[in-house]
Every structure is written in structure tokens, then in C-alpha cells.
Length: 168
Picture 1 (cartoon, rainbow, N blue to C red):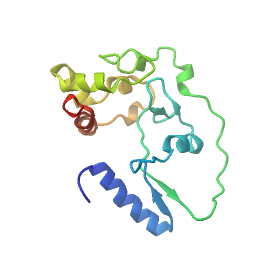
Picture 2: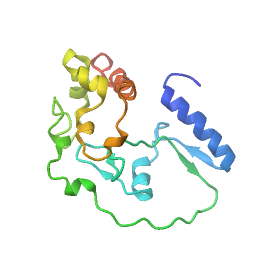
Picture 3: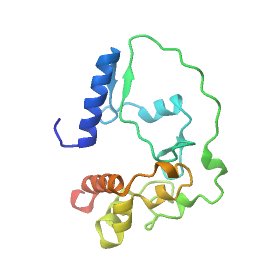
Picture 4: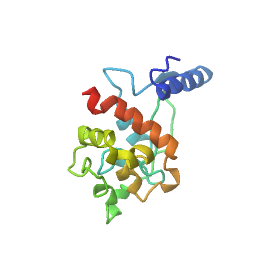
């Protein structure tokens, strides 16, 4: 492992071992360019939909899931067709995800990463930095899968390290 990105290192280690055992190739969303269409693949594989704030939303896990890799097999595997489903966001009347972000980084249809990172870098961003994105946490779906403060802090600090004001 390189430890430059521990989550990517962990994903490589675990999924490479699984691929060997299953005689498959492993593909990762973080290698490229060109980058593989993981989000499109996810939408074909399970009932996930674009959310109003950007990440795909799952009817059970809400905004609390990620795609760390995929296994590619030499032969086609028949899988049962997925059931038709609608985005859970269509029936969410309050849409708290759109009005919870303290800097409106997600409410305008485009994600404003610099505004988010700038907020996180300042003293007023402590809650989001420690607990995770307020807009994601506001979603009523997947509340049982919210990141713990340690997990949230890890991911938010990694985001800040990559996109923060000192890295622009």
C-alpha cells in the first residue's frame, strides 16, 4: 500500500484479492483518465437515482453508499431484471437536503465545491467538518447508515485536503 490515499489503497487490496479468488478483473473508479462510468453502471445495477444535491440516492441507504470498485468476469452472468422504481426524491416534499447547507453549496443545481471547502476551512465549518455534510445528513433516507463522527471527519478532512483554499 502507498498510503497516499488509504481508502483507495484499502479498496485495491481487498478487491484485488477478491478478483483473484473469483478469477475476475478488478476495475476502480479512481484510476484514469479516462475514468470508467461507475455511476452509470450503478444505475443499471441497482435502484439508485441522481439526488437533488448530486450523489446517487438509494431507497434504503439514502446518500450513504459508495462505489469503490467493480469485478469484471470473462463470461456474461445472467442476473434477474431489476424492478422498476422511482427516485425516492420524487415523493420527498420537504427536500431538506436543498435548504440545509450553510453556504448554499448544493441548492442551485450545481455543486459549489469551492464554497463548501472555504466554509469547511473556517471556524464556522466545524460542525460539517466533524459530523459530515449537513445536506447529506438532512436526507430522511438512510439515517441508520450515517457515518460516525470519526468516519465523517475522515472523509470531510480528505475533501478539504483535496479541494480546500490552500489547494486551489
